[in-house]
Length: 79
Image (tube, rainbow, N blue to C red; front, side, top):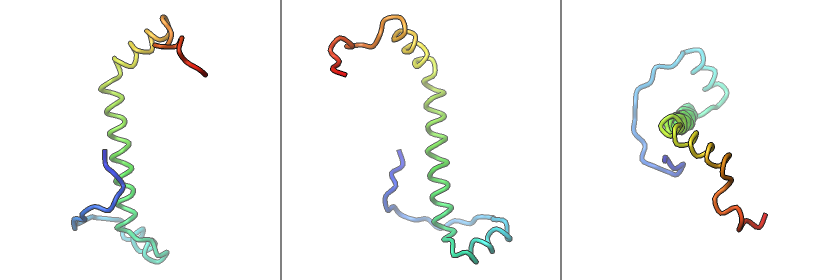
């Protein structure tokens, strides 16, 4: 998991639409920070999607078992 803490920065070259970049600068948007935050969210979403795909069979089977047998340890639940 990628933590959202201060981490080492690495310079990189990006190609961005000139009009959008100019407007972002005009509005005082920190382009580097915005790109970093967006990429961080994109990575999180892709990891989630892949985890769900890789574990889909287990999730389906677990849900089937819970549906037919109930939740494990349900008799000891206090809520």
